[in-house]
Length: 398
Image (tube, rainbow, N blue to C red; front, side, top):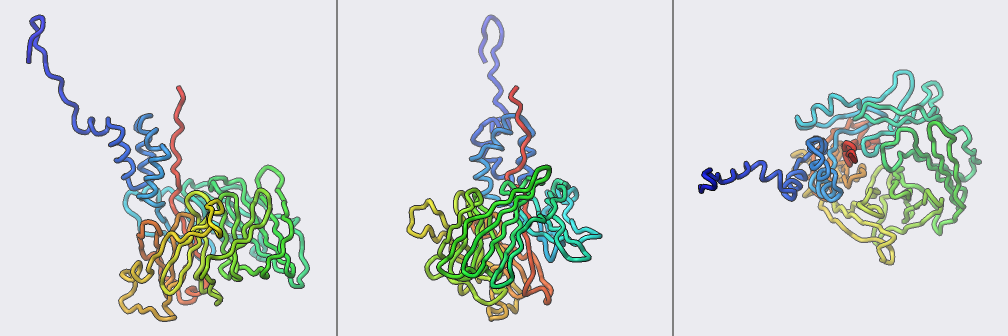
């Protein structure tokens, strides 16, 4: 210590280690992306404006999602029954506040679509088993949208050589409880056209019809009845070697051939092909062949001749073998089938009556369900995950 004007000069006290770390923006961002749960991101954002800016930064959110894929909270199975999965204590509050069970007492309810923390349910008249309307639920917010009456103006079609496939889907943002979309793929002989009906509360429903096309191979939908909405494109998997795409803005069809060597299993309920969301543009096609899971990415802007690129190959035996029953053998009855693909690059794989959850990028796997024997062949499962991205507080400009 020295003196100046007769007064002692003290050496500045170094900041405590915590202050030094949290005061470093780079270190703070590295800590935030390792918080494990999206709920922790929101808590961090409430500390101060500086932390809010870091927690809600798009680059931080992308890194966070790579490290911590949206957590699977449970499954909707056989109608609207919710089967919760074991969860860490950190999510106890979330489970206590949520309202997962949505089944009505006087009407029938089925879950038609699940997306980013919301579910789309179809309400049926118990007396006639006819759809009455659609309702969008947000179980984590305990909110329910109004009944969107089922359209009464749908065009009837002659029964001769005509098939109508109907898909009910949520909006891409997944947070709008006031609307949903019905897409109908109509095949009349060798010709195909589509109808889009947007049900929206407080305004008139929107009806749009595509032009008629005639694919080179007669259209027949996949037995799995799976569809995908991605980047305003609606995709349906067929069993004749191609995928049918529909631009919901222009109502134009797009016929996409499957990658070379990829074929769909022709037996009913034996699923080896599924569609899934992709990061950015395009979509994923998941193909299971001889216990090998191949994940193809299709991007119409990629410059490839067919738009396909093989991006992942996973051995199902290695991925889930350590979680299967000790006496489990790879026989025909215990074959691995793609049971469901969610919107966050996750797979539900079925082995016998066991269901396993596998995240494609991280390779994390867990057993999630034991099915009843009577439900083991044909059952509808809809994975329900945490909302992404989290809803952050609004930053005041003052």
